[in-house]
Image (cartoon, rainbow, N blue to C red; front, side):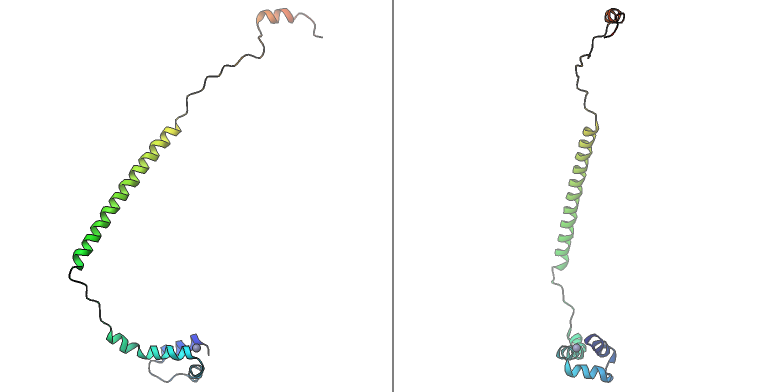
Length: 125
Ligand SMILES: [Zn+2]
């Protein structure tokens, strides 16, 4: 029997005798013996346990922290809103197409009526 199965058997025993394989494992495994002793002492440890008493000013300190948290949350929300508005404004500005840049384009060939009249009658070489 391994450690996990032995500890499951210990948890399930609840005061009854352990199965022989679990007993055999306990004789050879110190960590499981320590685990078994801790399990035995658990009820008395739980009986010793007392709920913590909050300090007298607990309510006042809690309120201060909650209100401080709300204030910080409001500031964060306002900052997020402003950043969103700025991003929207910048996005709107960027989405406007820039004005066209005037480009002077020279015609590659000045084809006028005179040019056509002059050269269309001559045979091409
Ligand atoms: Zn073990």
